Length: 489
Ligand code: GLN
Image (cartoon, rainbow, N blue to C red; front, side, top):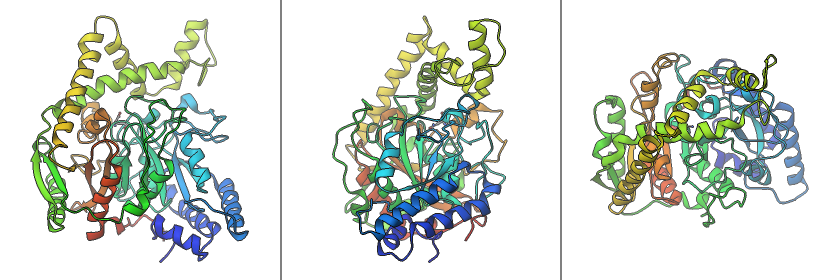
């Protein structure tokens, strides 16, 4: 099988056996980027020379018989919100156009230790705020399955890169769905780990009580491998939890017996596209044929999730983004009259419209007199949402749902309707509010050949269960093997 058609696990095996070198693999992906990214626009920056240099060094290590890390020369694409020493990290914003971090994020150090090749930086909605990657200050990424449609967001570049065979693996961040929704739209696997599972040291903060870094891959095994590489305790992120990290890439092949799958009645309501619903119901039949039991559960507060999120996330964002004032960090305006004017002009020029909208929403919700009515209230409802999940997980092992209410929408279709855009995360946001792990896996296609994703959620720190449940389905289906016509190879 060609390099580009292989899964990450297959490639690692071939690299280990010496059937291919890291230079072969890296070159194949660089050529794929050269061939396809002119149309897809997944990358903000491609590390051609550095990637080849890293690949050469890993091949050399192997030739000398030295121990090689678990990724053994495999390229990984990185969402441009994760600090990488010596490489521009723009967060899709003019504000950080010239920011070159002096240090590596924890996940980047882990990737280097695992001998990954850092192939490039992927496009994203500015500061990870958005659901379509259209809020990037630099370019609009297309969905590889239909170039007139969005890849989802905010990690749209990472999802599109994997879907179009321009990287076997990628990292994204998920605050309200930004890994799972683009994975669903692009027909790849995307996973948000439990809050606390992966260190955010070096992740540029959007909403700190929700942000998690997670993997994209072209199959569940690849997601398991990448999660295993990046998960685990790091003292530099005080929310990182010192729980043992299972060997996901080994256990992922073990099917679960007696799996109980919950279906929330609140998830199958108006607004859900019929073809998406049909794909989810078919997926449940596949699970049933594997011996799983499907049970109805109730998540009565999930109807408030989007509203709660759009108080909590902008509130935290308004605080996190205060640091970009042209002095501590970020773009400084060239022309100003006095200090206040300098702050105002720098922020006015550096931030795009959606980021400004969120800062205003958050500042309002946190201001005296509104704090109790909005922010505190939202925190209370957030707890109720978590309680619903705790109750549901007493009855079932995982909860299955759509990833998004529709397949990928058109570029430009929702840009002037922020509320409709916000609703595209209706199925993903609850997991962030409750801190749960969630995975999106390919589960079918619409009549117009757009991917449809299935989301599985599990209790905190049950990523292993999630990956095994996802792999059970994947083994029975070939949705994940399909590639868009725009992909090279
Ligand atoms: N689409 C959501 C938002 O706009 C989620 C973004 C994310 O997960 N980073 O905030």
